[in-house]
Length: 173
Image (cartoon, rainbow, N blue to C red; front, side):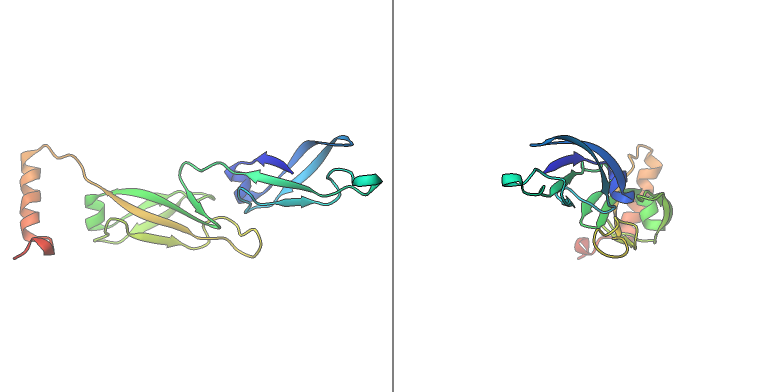
């Protein structure tokens, strides 16, 4: 077995690496094609590239084990990815359209009016390529609502009026 560190970009697009592998017969430079969609612990089998067999037998197989670091933006679950985007309370109430990063470039995401904390949106086929199979996984975008710091008394007064006009159901009598 040979462990190789690969980038998230290689997970999305695939890549080819040149490796020097040491075995009981010496060292050898080999090319390894890393297919798109691999994950930590996936095994890439290279037939006949392992150690020599016992008593002069043929060489065994070499298994390349990719190691993929955690991504700073995406959380991975198989071929699916997820991420959280921040919107402010005004965008949550009124709705908004904003850019969301995907592995293949940003796309517009429309958040409808009255979006709630934790609302999840599915962007079909915007995840990781499937290692064995056709297509890609999905990208799930979760909304996190941020609240601005208000110091202006008139803004605070306006918010209090809105709170009285639209009380939470558990605050009513």
